[in-house]
Length: 173
Ligand SMILES: Cc1cc2nc3c(=O)[nH]c(=O)nc-3n(C[C@H](O)[C@H](O)[C@H](O)COP(=O)(O)O)c2cc1C
Image (cartoon, rainbow, N blue to C red; front, side):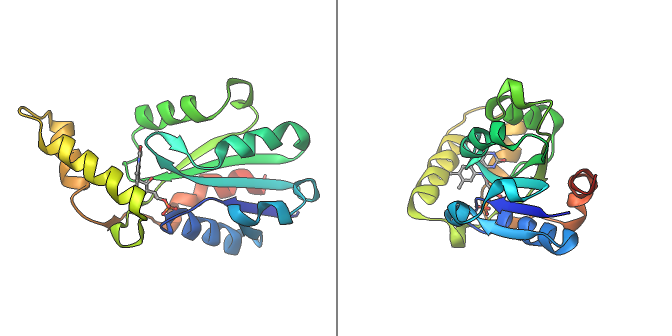
């Protein structure tokens, strides 16, 4: 079975999950920037991975535009973020990023990553600074807001290879 892992990553969390997947499944691993160099229809299974920024999964829109031309292939979406794998928040991200007619066809898997300030670009850093300022300005923060403020204060890495278990089982069929 030929499997392709395509990923959109800026600070490396999604890339690392994509590389682990490729190793475990013997799949080809291709970054988003090189997506036009691969013929998607030449694969039996394709997993697309993107990072979540302000609720948007990078590259997912493009992936779902390709999906109608890939009937008969096993497709999956995975996405990384800083948040813990809370089912409600994950469900919201899926609702926002997976078109309704694709939800039965393309399962989505959330893989917790973390934050890496050292590798963020200028815009990412500025957005995170805005978020930190907003959280710090709360006069009576809720427990969730207090926890969020603590979590965005510095870099951290919660990625773990075992998080890939369900996605790998799905891709293997
Ligand atoms: C500007 C910005 C916005 C973010 N928004 C979210 C978010 O809405 N939810 C979340 O869980 N993580 C959010 N994150 C954290 C990233 O999703 C997380 O660091 C991700 O694993 C990065 O993937 P990458 O290393 O492959 O680029 C955000 C990070 C940045 C820099």
